[in-house]
Image (cartoon, rainbow, N blue to C red):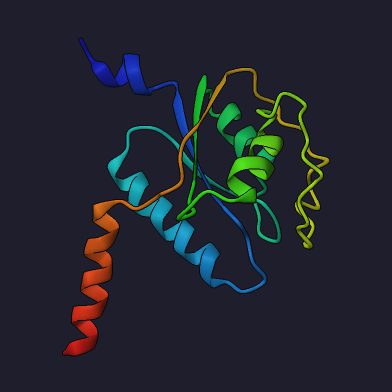
Length: 148
């Protein structure tokens, strides 16, 4: 049995970034996506909450056009916050209509939120990166490199 054709051929991955006026975050997420693409047998897209393109809906629509039936959405954030708990689920339509207007967050999110998601498949939303031991290895590398 060919696992790739049965288990991953209809899957797409969306890496979600915050977006910024400065290029650094976009460059990092696009770099991560490129590395991931080299190791994956399914499409990988990037989407941003604001300021950068493509937007989250645009990226989902791109994956939909590629024929995926299931999209795994992973926020490329270290920890949960307003964005990962409220804003991104709202954009994805996963908040069941429960909007929380109680938070005071002063920058606007997606100028393009008027673009509708055209995807009838399943969206699975994962946890952010968190305190993963693999990140500690990167931290240790940064410290050790600074000592040389």
